[in-house]
Length: 366
Ligand SMILES: Cc1ncc(COP(=O)(O)O)c(C=O)c1O
Image 1 (cartoon, rainbow, N blue to C red):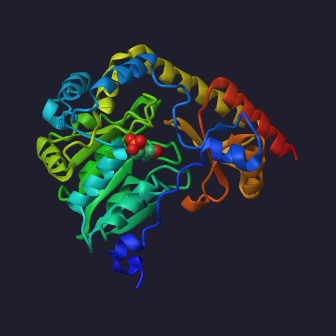
Image 2 (cartoon, rainbow, N blue to C red; image 1 turned 60 degrees about the horizontal axis):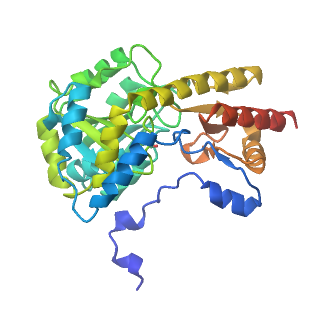
């Protein structure tokens, strides 16, 4: 008998999430230095120096348990978002909240609907509860098709994940499509509007999802400090929803799921609006730089509302990816997402984008 035989079958069969390769691993393996990572949709700028100083100061109190309610962060974020404090729930990254929502609403035999390709954690959290993921193909232009999402709902559907903007395509849906989705999906289905890249959105008609959960308590909006605040390593995200939804999340979560360091850092990150503005500005300019570069190289790409771009490279994608790696640029292949001819590249610092575009140009000219 192996230990695996003792495990729940749906855990045993789970495909673990595979992240981008760490810089150190690539440097060690290829025997090269100065590798840059444009593979995991991380912020290329370090955290705000004010946040780093806050973390250092908060470290002196690590003998104490955190405030399990994140009282001060809750007050400050509620004011910022113009919601009530009881509309907020915090988590160890928005990843944790995705897992908690699955734990609350899914069980064996249930279904969760989402567009595909989309965020790789959706099938993981759904399978983790012994439920069935129902994947709905994106449109040919890689947009999320809300009519097809709604049509995939069955009596067994309990959850619907909407990554907006979507990862790995960077595409988003606007106000009209969002309203159509809320209208078409029955209220007994919980809609999770996963807005991890919200702060980078460029389209003017992005849905005001925070103004919708009053009317529809079965809608929850997830956001993150990982991307636009450069705090991916700290692990803090939040959910905004109806107090009844927040109450369920509070019951399902661990009492101290957000560390005292993470709470203090997130508060300071919110206050340092200059740094947040720098990150957004860097991303806006970086997207333009990449788009210009791709157009000069005659490459197709999806217009992105996030901090990465999905690039179409055709049959030579594997060789190009490996060539880039050899030149010290880590990007992400998308074959696991059914996008076998695409590469996803995260917006880097201007000099990193430049280095990537030059290396890409060299690979294409071979
Ligand atoms: C669409 C989407 N949702 C959620 C997450 C998770 O973010 P966090 O770091 O807050 O767990 C990611 C991370 O890449 C993402 O792409």
